[in-house]
Image (cartoon, rainbow, N blue to C red; front, side, top):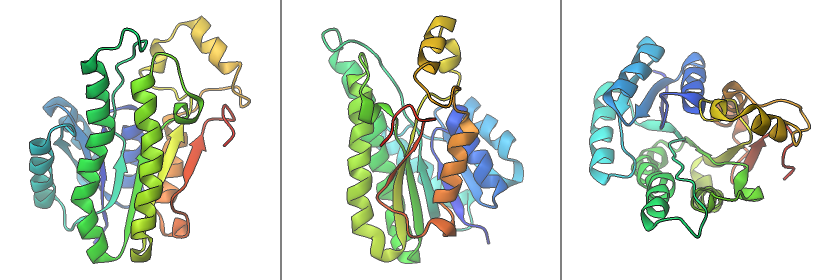
Length: 242
């Protein structure tokens, strides 16, 4: 029986790449999206190696419903969790509305709490688990116009360290992967000048790929990473040196 992995925000970009890589590595992968269309896309991508579900991490009832669905489609509890779901609502702080702040915090940070809380008991009972939280290089660098987003990504690193200390004795590891400038649908919308300016700051001279991030996640959820926990692994081509 293969282990069950849950990847939130798996319909595109980094989440889709992670879901596919874990499925290729033998996990039964459940990927979440916020719409039926997104869930169907995940299911089609994963085939018999996984399933797609609808999950809105900012809604407690949606989380409860999703885990009922997970119990129906998987052979066992979730033993690998990749908290990837997240949103941006960029604005300068002087102009940022309370709604823009609260929506980002409730999705990126409170949503992570809701999902992680659901899987912990099963991991503790199994005495094995892997949790990977997807952060961002801006948690260390900062970024103007993203005080809400940056605050959540910085908080995720602290959450990761504290939770790792709590569950390490149960053979559960908790780590953060912090991507830098990655080629996704979002970065594809940047102008040529914006892209060139960013590339000048990256020693590797290129944007990262979603697969670059997925490769690191795949290692962190494997048996080979059992002695790595409470860490933030940067995947940024040298843009930021931790």
